[in-house]
Image (cartoon, rainbow, N blue to C red; front, side):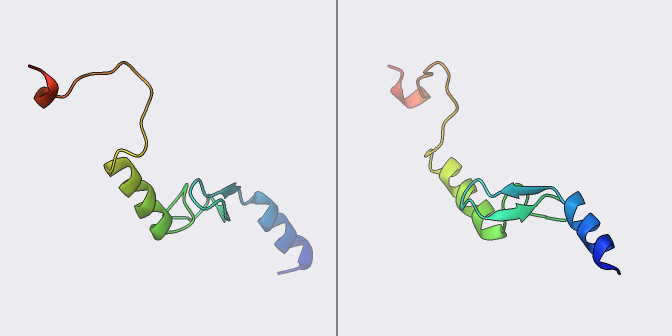
Length: 67
């Protein structure tokens, strides 16, 4: 592969920052996208599970809060 071919193939890769650690990673051929690794993906999932993240909306009481 020539230097020009290598540069062109690198230009075609869509690079993104991991939403958790902010490291650069590629979108193509990345099984963990948009994350850079399985670790970042699992940490993010854990934060959702622990309700550290929330999507804005109306407050809806939980069944145990209703009485």
